[in-house]
Image 1 (cartoon, rainbow, N blue to C red):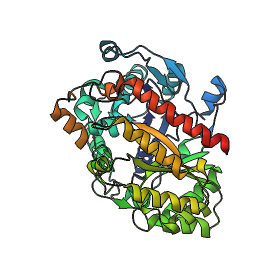
Image 2: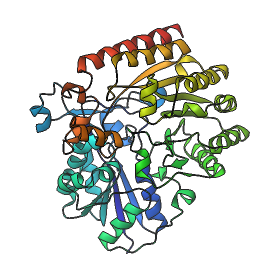
Image 3: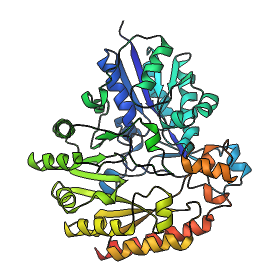
Image 4: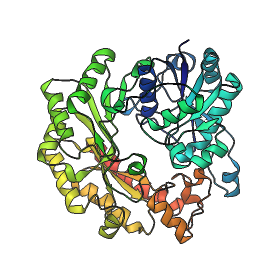
Length: 452
C-alpha cells in the first residue's frame, strides 16, 4: 500500500508576528521529493491566512501591502522564562485557531508519519505546542521535526519539542535520515533542487508564491546563520526558474512572486532571469524582501528590475559605521550603498518601492550610528526599516557573546527574540531606546509616504 505523509507548518508563538509573505518553502520541497518517490503527501499550513475553511469560519483576512497582513491571534500563557525576567509583553499564538487545526488533523488518522517543519529558534514554543496537539489527535503516529530550529538547536529540539525524531540539516539529508528512522525505502534524487519545484498545488489559494533560485550564501556575515545551513552556494538555471514562474501564474493567476534567496544578485543568474521575464512578457508583481546585496545593483540590474515590474526592493544596509560594517561581514559600505540606491532611483523606482534594513541593538553599536543610517536613507530618498538584532544560536556573533559572558549558551531561545531582548539584556539598547529609534524611523517613513 502506498505510504502517506502529513506535512505540518506549525504555529508561531511570539509577542508579535506579521505575514510578510511567509511560506514553508522547505516543507513544500519535501512534499515534492516524497511524491517523486511515489508517496502521497498532505499539507496543513497553520499560517495560511487564505485557507478556505479559515476564511469561512473566521472571515476573510485583511490584506494590506501586496497581500501581506496580520495573522489571526490567540492569547496564551507566558512561559516561565518570560515570568522570571519580568518581560512586560504577552505571548500570542498566530495562525489557525486550535479547534480548526484539530478538525483538520482528524482527517489524517491513516497517515504513516507526520513531518513538522520549524523556522526561527525563538518560535520553538509554537513548534512544541503544534506537536502536542498532533500527538493528542493522532496518537502514536511518528512525528519527525526538521527545519531551521531543528538544525541550529538539535539538542534543544530533542529535549523540548516532543517529536519522536529530530532530523537536522538542509536539502535531502533530513528527509533521508527521517526515512531511515521510519524504516521506509526510497531513493531521493540528489538533483532535487534543479529538477523539482515546491508543491504549491497543496494550497487552495496561491495569490502569493515564494520561490528561491539559489541555496546558501558565499558571504559570512557574523550575525547570520544562512551560510551555515547549506554546504556551498548553488544557483538554478534561469530558464527553469522562469518556466516555473510562468507555469504558476498560468495555473493559479498568482499576483505576487517573492524571491527569498539569501544571495540573489551574485553572478549573472538573476540578470538572466530578469531578461527572460521581460522577453516572455510575464505580467505580475515581483518582490525582494530579504535584504539584497546592494553592491551588485549596477545600472543594468536596476533597469531590468524596473522593467520586469519589481515593486518591493529591500536593501541590506545594516549599519552606517564603517568599522561595524567591516566587523559584521563587510558586505556593504556607504559608497556602495549610495551607488546602488542611485542606480535604482535613476531607473525610476519610487521612494515607497525601495527600503533599507538598518540593524539596531548590535553588540558594540552606538545609538548615534542607527540615527545616522536613518538619515542616510532619508538623504537618498528611500525608506528606512529598523531590523532589531536577534542573537542566533550557532552564529559567530552568538558564540562571541557567549565567550564574552554576555549570553548564556543554554538560555531559552525565546529570550533572544528581538522584541524581548531589550527588556532584559544589559549589554545592548534598552527597550525604551529601541522604541525611540523605531518611532523616529517611522516618522521619517510617514513623511515620505505622505508626500507620495
